[in-house]
Length: 514
Image (tube, rainbow, N blue to C red):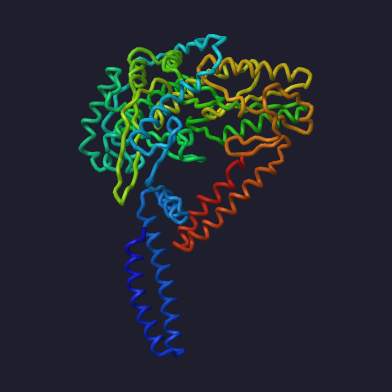
């Protein structure tokens, strides 16, 4: 869509250039020809200057300057999300264009992901309820103050998207002063009674196309939007939950995801240190990259509550989580434009019986607490490195017994997953051995043996040469350079610097610690 300032300038310059053109056509002399060329050049310069000023002004006025920059870049790339003009989906062998039938079919597909994923999971061979009790209990959550609620609202990202209640964070921030007192009262009542409000359990999901045919439902990813008030309440509970875990040192050091002071960098550093240290000691080193299918979607609510209980979440505190997880539903919303009119179609709600709520504040942390006992089960057999659901097994030693130890470690990992409703995807699980003698490391049956693997955005190869990673990085940087040049053309030098830090420098710096 053309910007207002572009339209005004365009109309002005078209009139001005038309006048010059008419004069030149009438006189056909060189001076009028030069005047016409000059007018065109002035138009191009004015347009470029106005675009630069408008872009710079947009970024300077934005609360989130990086997000504003990305909007400009995406507009330039012409990859901005647009409303689906005509959505068609194959349903029971027939290509359907009825939006309600499509929304209904998608909602059924999304809410049954866990059931389909777990369908072929082997029956557990070990008891999942073997986690040790910590002995440190949390029975009740401390009440929230009005200042705490105000600070949470203040720090929420300002978004215009909203759940079915149509209340966005942008609206909430404008009403912060009026809503703080009643909101604090409702939140504290929820904490005291151990009940999560039913009105906050309905998620609005819109389908986002990933790749492949747009008529295949499996090529869409559900993007869930939860009520804004839910996120505030969840942040209150999250702070108290993490305080409890940190106070009694309950979190495993092997988990690097969603934990304060840890990141992909700490995970990569531990991973590399293990390999380098053992290679320097003359040992053989091998690794197994486990791929967990739909891990966040498959978790059993009963198992989540059991593991929270083992971490000391008891009584009312545990009852709150039981209420938080149960009786959740979701609808699928589809937007389509016809003759310039946008139509919104929603499916009927369907229940969500498994997993942590997608798009929630507590969901990722509940997952890392759920898998917090993996090292307890596997430490006798291997070293585990985790970043959320990215799980890697590391083993070192002499080649004579490394195959038996590797097989045992993998078998124990599979047993843990089967017993905890986690599904290992064998087609995407791989083995990579490291070092000059990596050919001597035995290959484990039914596990794909590779010479490299992409781990948390870094390509690690068996010789630790980083050559493939560097080649991949150069390709990214070439694309980034083009976008930086385009950004400079449509904005000022300060915006180009922001683009450099976002698109170029971050890629170079990522992984330098290892």
